[in-house]
Length: 183
Picture 1 (cartoon, rainbow, N blue to C red):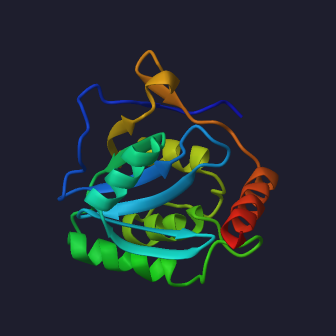
Picture 2 (cartoon, rainbow, N blue to C red):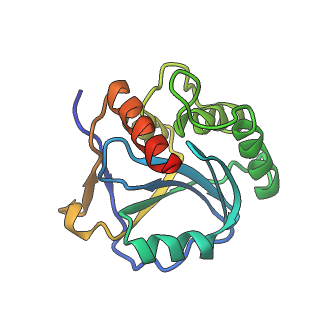
Picture 3 (cartoon, one colour):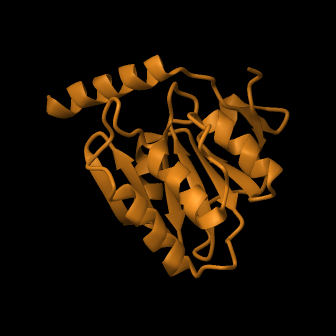
């Protein structure tokens, strides 16, 4: 499979638009990255530690800045059939189907795929990886723009190339975070 790259906006990104939807990719240069969704300025994700629900954008950006986390904010067209509040509720419903990220149960991408299937009518059944989801969202016209933080060294000719990864690398990443979390 060919690597997928995102065109990165050249405009400075200080804070997310409070009226927007973003697919947030943290540790974007790593295999695998961590993902969540920010809707109306509130970030939520499923992780090995459990659920992060309605984290204010300012808190997320401060954490990213303090730790200099390579991050992408993929702005998604707001589905006009829903309010931001309804979209956020839909995403949290998908997260709440799982207690946490765990091998063979759910990855951080799992509730995101369910969200795009439920609220954007995107066919995600055959999608297992971020680098498969993003081309589909782009093809269907849902991606508006992509902003980056702390990613300058990984942006070539205005594009950020997503690393390909395997299910084995996802499971290894889950085990590593679980071990670090327990210590």
